[in-house]
Length: 197
Image (cartoon, rainbow, N blue to C red; front, side):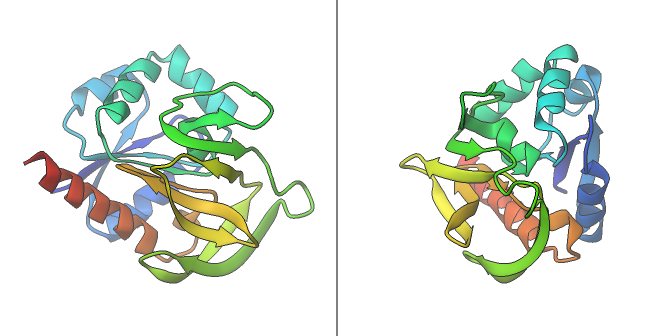
């Protein structure tokens, strides 16, 4: 059975847990180094929405930063939503503090500003079709590296992308009741397992 860790330091981790339970996937909350070491056999990791600066600081304070970064860079499938996307980005517009910096994307934090701080729309997601997207002061991906694939755009802005074993969305698929993006991530995990055989 697939086992997915959900970083549970802050933010919308419980909602991801509910979606995965509905898909009959075992989940583990990662709150400290002991959780991470106890569940060294994870098949994937979710970095949820929340406050990226707070989450980045907690990763360091709890000695989770290096072990998680090492595992992601070694190929652990990871899915970052909203703040999770910012944590994974190699560069952040304006030179703000980088975090895990594992994915070759350059992001703008809170790109939609206050007016469009939160909104819901439907847009096409490559390989899935049209899905509902909930944005809560979401970041956007401004530029991508050569190995990054764009999966979704809204009004010309990149809001979902994939690079090898890493998946990111600016929006919150865990808040829509639509499980297809999580299923897409589970398929990435299956593919990753096959490649390791």
